[in-house]
Image (cartoon, rainbow, N blue to C red; front, side, top):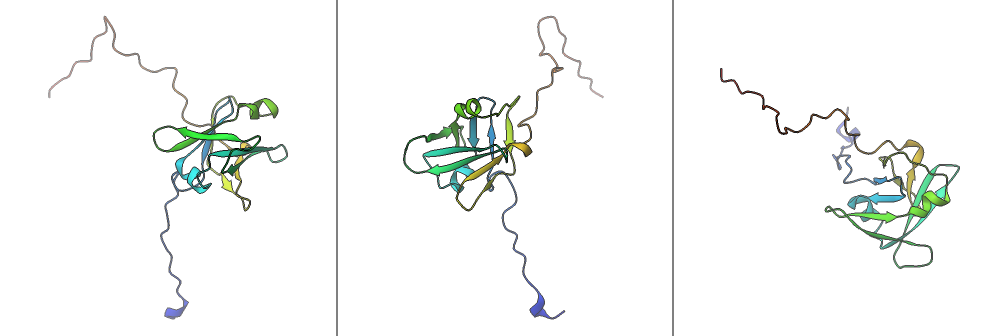
Length: 148
């Protein structure tokens, strides 16, 4: 093969939650965005929130200034994430969540709207086991340490 046929492959960024759009949603309608997602949206202070019944998708459109029907995008957590408190989303539309969900496959379309697909969103986090070991309490004996 001639040297002119080769094309260089660049390593790019590894796929991680810190360099792609991602978020979570709680059953009460709170939408949390990672810092990277907020940066990709242009660090908006407000957002319009949409819902597509046909696609079962939530849309978040960044807005610079507060206008009618916008939701504030406020700081959340210690790593620069943001939260949109959209309780009216679950009140107005048929969105019923039994547990928080994570949007791993969020996309930003050509209109700059963050698309959060409810139909593909898995449960966020790991449920805690109901059979966790109890902490050592009064009357319990610590296991012996045996030197060999």
